[in-house]
Length: 124
Image (cartoon, rainbow, N blue to C red; front, side):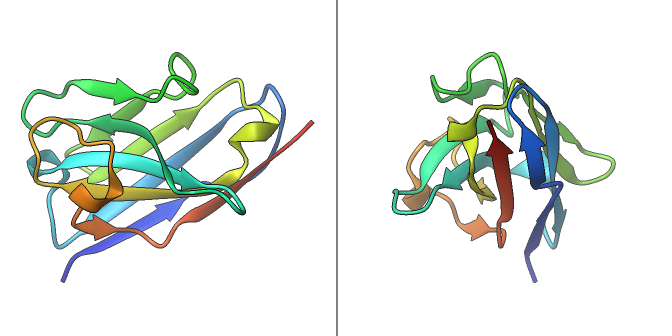
């Protein structure tokens, strides 16, 4: 049974940092393209960052480029999203998701497995 569990969310001040983790079981992170998405209240879920399983190429939304590096630890079967220089507009529930696509997809419909989400709140 596939299970993805996000952690690391919480409250941070603008300019601060958080590191989100996505621990996987039932799947191996090196065999899937992994994406991070977020959903703010009243808004659509949006793509944040992703890493390809085959090439390890990374892809980022313009809004987080240069601030939110994505990485994975195959030995721990865990994916990370390091969130730096946080802004109040980064406040959202963050989700990790796994896709079998080689190229990182940005649409949520192309991801097969999802975690339950972790709340990130950034105060100004």
